[in-house]
Image (cartoon, rainbow, N blue to C red; front, side):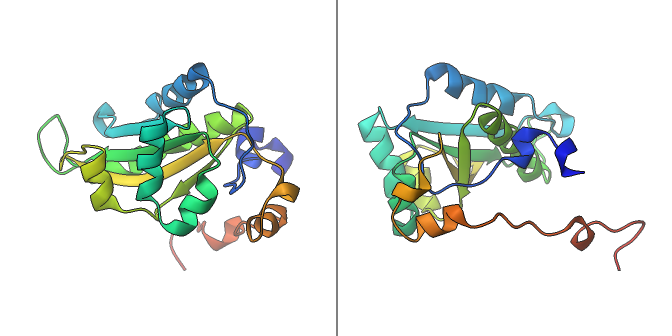
Length: 187
């Protein structure tokens, strides 16, 4: 039955190895256009993104400096780095938006599936300094920094250093649907 899944979903994975191929400005735009079309509570669209490419040396180095050493080591081969953010409150009434993280996740999901459709891959990271990101990237208290996303075209796993090679060559394993879907109520 998996053959009926959209290829962009079925083929999506979080690589730690990226190739040398650059991402065009048009491709970057399409990733954010895909995010724009995500559903959101009251159509608030609470997401925001700050990004840099490896063509922008100062900005790129700033993004890399936010990452943990482990993430910086492999993510430095990605030509595009994106920080996803979510707005804490509804613009509609100023109340806390308890759906904002969900909605931002939907936007990021769209972005990642668009990347997969376009032959790219994306890897989300929580391993970064959020306080430093807030200061370095001029993020107001109105937003919550979510994840930094490394995006690029796949690299050759056989040319990568360990442990990245081993991870890239492992079979992808996902929990079976029966582990997380329950009819009518939780067990």
